[in-house]
Amino acid sequence: EKEKFKITNPFSGIMMAGGIPSFITSNLMTKKYRSEVFAYYVNAIFYNNLKDFPDKKTFLFFDELRAICERDDEPASKAIGNVAARGRINQVGLIYATQFYDKIPNTVKGAKLNYLFAFAHNSSKILNEIASDFDLDRRTKLKIKHLNTFEIIAMTNNKFICYDFSGG
Figure 1: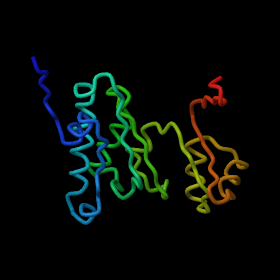
Figure 2 (figure 1 turned 90 degrees about the vertical axis):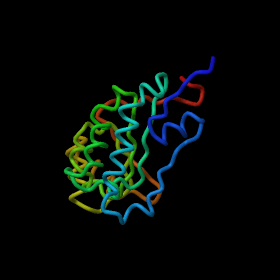
Figure 3 (figure 1 turned 135 degrees about the horizontal axis):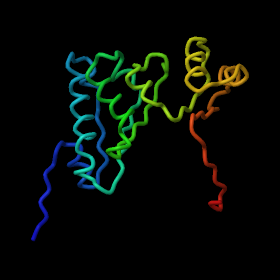
Figure 4 (figure 1 turned 90 degrees about the horizontal axis):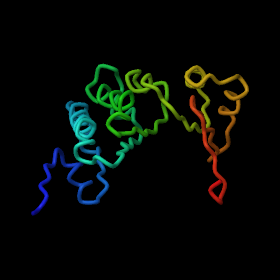
């Protein structure tokens, strides 16, 4: 007897087929309803992940998150903030990139950002916000400010676990 699958949204259908869905936003970014469209897909994945993929974790990757959600009152900000705050329950993780850390809505950033990988920043406002969120000292703030091209500093409020090449 064939198993029956109910596909809850197009992204789940692509993932069930073994593909990795990508949401191309170039045509959507100028539309006034873009936040609602993003919110629909993020919510569909969040609420259906355990049912659609009971033994798998799903990660949502956003490049330049600020382009998708800029204000706390936007539907996309609320949906992405929900994933940031409660994604672990439904086995959904959030990974995002931005050049403007200070512009990420509090609904997203305030929901327990666990890790931050920072390249050089010259903005005192951004450096102060990062320092506040990750309890950084003045020396570390200066290191971030003076990083060279392709250098990065990793921060966490948790613990990093490091392995050597032999896995130990």
